[in-house]
Length: 176
Image 1 (cartoon, rainbow, N blue to C red):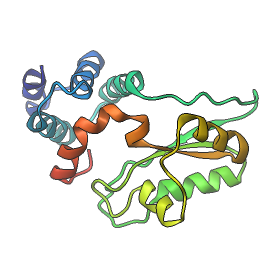
Image 2 (image 1 turned 60 degrees about the vertical axis):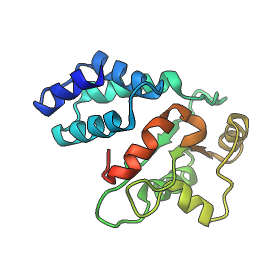
Image 3 (image 1 turned 180 degrees about the vertical axis):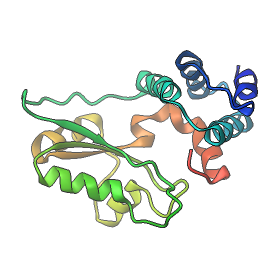
């Protein structure tokens, strides 16, 4: 599966939403080799991701993610704040700062994040430096969001199927 899609990407052809969803499921099921994963995400980055490709990847990730069910009032807004990582400009972790500002403004925040992969520091690195416990259960994150307006969803715990892509992403060292 990955070699056929990789051939399309190398030719700068877009993948359909369905192709991308199936590719991500294949990767997250542990069926792709590390070399296939590295080649696939590099080719995708070089071509540039389309909306359809991002939607397909997101659908596959949502299927595999551990969920947190938040009780909220009708007027409540729940916002998921997640940075892209590896901006190559040596900026500080903007998404984490943004999450605090939004939460202070009354917006309930579900902050997804991880340790640094291709940047100076990831959200988890920042929060740990601030003394925040990052490895929380779904129930604990739910309580944080409901009681104080912000909770951190540590990627390895809430997206365990992404473990197959972690090493190839770290080794290629570019934002993917």
